Length: 323
Ligand code: NCD
Image (cartoon, rainbow, N blue to C red; front, side, top):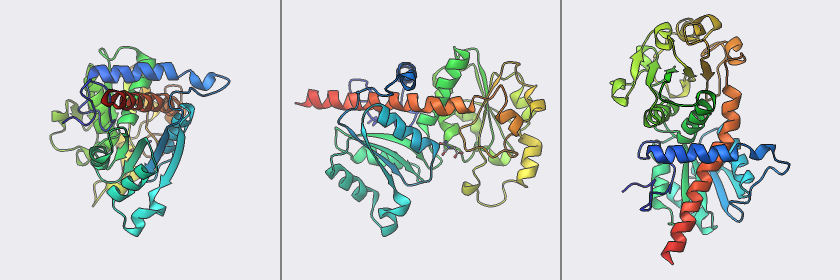
C-alpha cells in the first residue's frame, strides 16, 4: 500500500519523494508558486486551514525547518502546537505510538514530524486515523522531502526547465537525508544530469544506482554545472575517522570564488543550512551574488504551505466521501 497517495491519486501523507510521481511534484511546485505572494499581502494569511490544529513534533533540533513549518501553518490560518520532545515524554520513556494517541485524543489534524530514526514518519502515517495527515520534516538519514521540494522550487524559479540542467550535489552524501530526497526529486522532474561530489568515504556504496554520476574531484564534479547544492558535514552522524580534518576537507572540497569559476557563469549556489563557513564554503561564496541560500529559506514557507494544504484537502475530501 502506498501511504502517500490515496486511491483518488491525491497526496495523503508527505513522507518521501520516493513513492510519489512527477505530477504530484509539479502540483506541489505550482501550489507553492500561488502561495509565494502571500507574505507580500498586508494580511499575510489565507484561510485554507482555519479551524485545523497542526502539531510540530520535533524529536531532533531544528531552527529553519521548524520555524518555517510554523509560519506556513500560521499563514494558512491553522492553530499550531510546537512540541520539543527532547524536553518531554521521550525522556520519560513514552513510546512514539503513545505520544501519537494522546495527541489524537486532543483532536489534532496534522503531524509534522522530525525524528532521528529513519522510518519514524512512515510509522506514524501507518498508525494515524484516516482524517489525520503526516508530513516528514526529516527522519534519520532517510528523507527530508520538504527540503528537497523547496530546493526544486528555488531551482525552477531561477532556471525554469529542469531538462537542460546539470546539478552537482557536493559534500556529505553518505549521511544526508537531504541529498537522498534531492536526487529522487531531480530525477523525477527530469533534470538532465545529476552529479554527486564527495570524498570516497562520504559516498554511499553503489551510489550510481540512485541515478547519479559520482565524482571525487571537486573541479571535475562542478565543471559546467548550472546548479551547485552544497551539504553540511554531518559530524554528529559520523562514526570513526571518515575525514582527516575540517581544514583538509575545505582544502579539497570547500567552495571558493576561484573554484566556482569551473561551473557555468550563471551557476547558482545552494545550501540547506546550517552552513559551516570555512568548511563547506567560504563566506564570499555564501554571501556572494550566485548564492540563493536565503531565497531557499523564504521558499521553504511557500512549499510547506503547499504540502500542508494539499494533504489536508485530501483528508477532508476522503472524510466527505466516507460519509
Ligand atoms: C538539514 C537537515 O536537518 O537534514 N537541515 C535543514 O533541514 N535545514 C541539513 C543539515 O542538517 O545539514
